[in-house]
Image 1: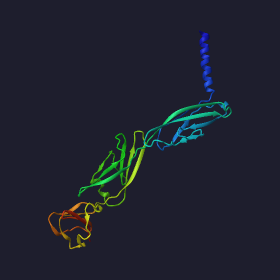
Image 2: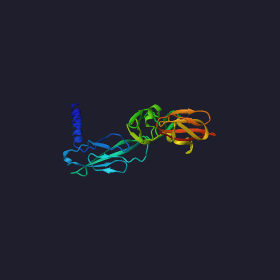
Image 3: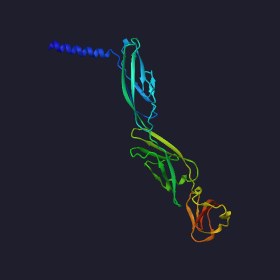
Image 4: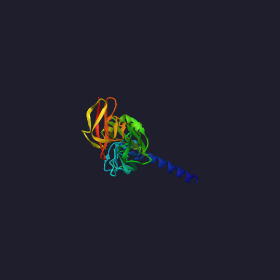
Length: 278
């Protein structure tokens, strides 16, 4: 029994020594998002007697490298889908070219979300709420961050921005409107568009350039070239500040100096014209 035990111990010891005295190809890599550079950690064993080693990487997407510690951005063939690539490493002794070893491992490339969207304004006369008209990504497992004019406005999937929140931006100027979407795999995309809206510029009615006179008005009197009804005057923010329901061809308006929008009903058609008060 002692002889058998001795033989087993000697065999195990010699096997360990042999393993430590051979080339061993070994590496690790972390799964990444599409477009992110993958970093390969080469932990191969190259004993001194082999005089160093040459490294040959095959990334599985048709590309290769001879770097010892390569970095690589994978070329996906399935946009929007998760994709796996088998990466192979071959190491070859510099002093004994016939001595080689190889190993393979898989890396997963996760897709980035599509954060694109379009917006619209729900114009109710007195208020203008901003709504999301269309949206590419609505997965409930994602993280969403909506940003208007440099200010985070919501983390809802598909939010509605009430008039009180967006009123300062309803001035016709250009503001950045962005959405950041991050998946559970920590892949993210940001889509940026321009928010530009002025309630006075919305042509929901027929523009009638000769509806009002004189313009700018005089003595606070707004005269109409036609007999109209349901007169509404809005300020620059789109708020209705004057209403006259019945038929008339003249109304008195004591608005402060500025630009206004006037709409009036004429035979079932809404007519509009800009009004200047000096």
